[in-house]
Length: 118
Image (cartoon, rainbow, N blue to C red; front, side, top):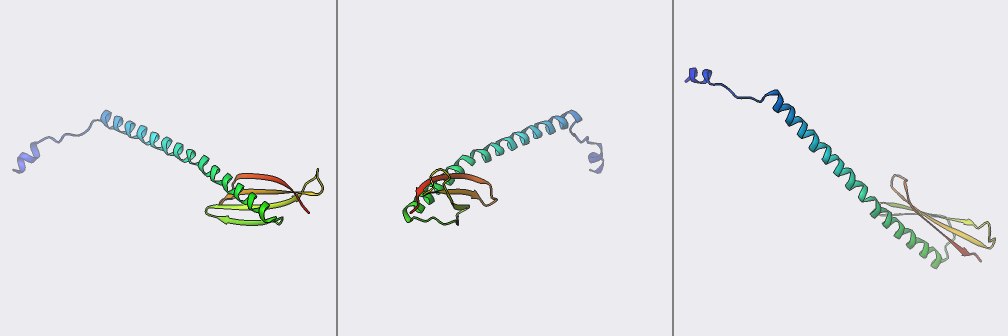
């Protein structure tokens, strides 16, 4: 039985087969990375839409409550900063600026509205 095991040939892969397998694997890995990056980039517009909705919400809230103070809010994964500055053209008006950032402080949205300040 030992002689039979020693006499049998083991079949292996040739160098060409191994190189083809490596090439196919690298092509598949490259495609997977490209698909992953495209999926990540396609979610950014949804985040920006959500940021615009939050900015609109906080602008309308500031107008309704007549809040003309600088404030900072946190909601979900966003940081909302409300700034109030004097309007240069209309001296009796103020500009309310709402900026929405992600947690890494990357600006996603900005809305500006001018109101009459009594």
